[in-house]
Length: 186
Image (tube, rainbow, N blue to C red; front, side, top):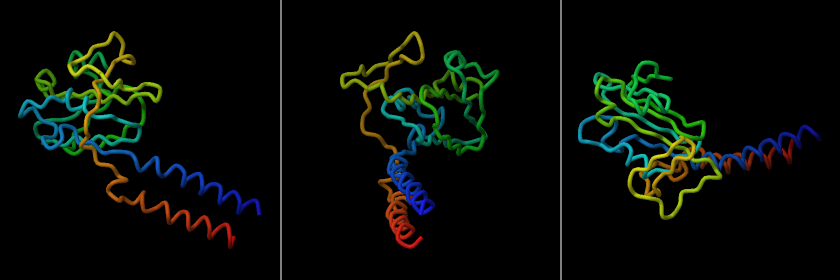
């Protein structure tokens, strides 16, 4: 009887976690323009209109003949220093899963592109941090990375897995049925 109860409890815990997973979003950097130097895309403004969370997926779409994506430290980001990136992506369709809170700095490592503005700071707020309703609309600066403020988010173009009727949203009822079955017949 203990094994049945353990299986049922494990599935109940998993079911409780699934609705949270379905709230993850997929963001295409630069929206329809993508990752480029053409069109004067303001990636700082683009990021400021988003509320990034753990588990979100950031997609960089670009022409791999002319661009790349480098993940870098804050000091490298500020200086557009391409000498020692943490990671370099070169596929032209890079999906990056955000697994830690705080700032995630990216830029294009092609000479001159970062200086031209092809760089973005993806900031995942800690749970205790809140975005003030009257946050400034212009650029903000901070003396240290963790205390950086972010303008108030506006409507997002993020793609919600839950809203899409994705497989995670459909999986919960199936798992609930399975748990009932296991509990009754195992």
